[in-house]
Image (cartoon, rainbow, N blue to C red; front, side, top):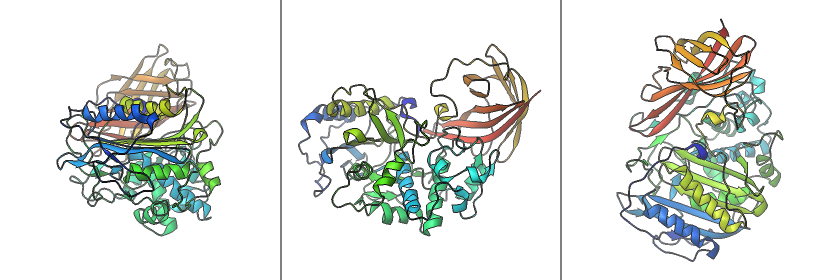
Length: 519
């Protein structure tokens, strides 16, 4: 759930098998496991690369599907969906999608907007059935449905998995909102990737439609698009035949887990069906698909609004490759999951790559580049600047390319105040000097240097070795990332506990309000 360019490298264990895989067409009968079909000659090299990735042990399996000009060129899976049982992956094997669930949630919201049941520019609280956010800045009227879809509502980063074997009941959404549903930055000003925002959107779908979110997605999105191999996971048993997820480091299966609520993840889907979803959003619906959105709505989801918004639309990431071709896409990366869905509208190209492990980002992008090089002349260096979410500092309100941090006179000085977590307040002092030096002192903890990643006259971002010791972050080794805006003699924004849990190979990002005044 991070941007692919920022994923940590994970090394897999050597594989003891070599499996050719299986494939089928999107409109034909399912091909039995182990069968093979001809691949488009242009993609033969890509197939060799994928076979090498699986046989090397980099990932237990890979499942891919590629379409160009509405024609399916390749659909094949390689390796094992379940290592213990020796179950082969197929193009119909359902994988945990991670954040690729977000454009699916956005599709549901846009259906309700088309029906006149949701106003995208109305406050999201209108549709949350009594759930209320905490407005440290701004007002409810500014936190609109559209801004939540775009990750521009002022919500901070948020990421937390709940493992079924540890917390069978998970956590109610209202409690997550009580702890972390805070507006910390002015809505509309900055892009800040927030999983919690998409959980709120799933709540909106339920409240407006009167249907549980899993049922709505099954009946109103998946079924009309012919996606029989797609399902919202509800903490019960995994979907029948679903690929198990594996830790990249030791190759052990990842225990079943979910987010606090639906919407930002928790969808299982096959490569076969995910390509069907992509083709619909690429304006190339297959003959057996029923339209779930008008063409104009599909176009609006891919549009840059406002014009300077180059990061994220209504459920989709944006990027431009070295040929100037615009990419619309989403990634999905979380514990035991690494996926990518890419569309290039001008080339009428769509493809899907699914892996059931914490796959090295560069290896996943290598397959992405190989597909583009094979099908788009001159596209040998295509890359993605971003993909997914529980985010890193690149998703805070700062420029994409930060200059070397140098503190302005407006920032220099001693600042005192508090971090306000959901269960405690912690005194904090920052000492900032004009040479770029920065020190943080949390009450009861030793002074720590701040590793500044960005600084201007009105904004500062940096990380230091401190602790916000709430029960939620206790299982994680963590540091503190600051992202604060200066207004006169006040610094305010977020202090995020950024954690890593070694025994579950999982990340956590939990944000609190921070407010300091110059001494």
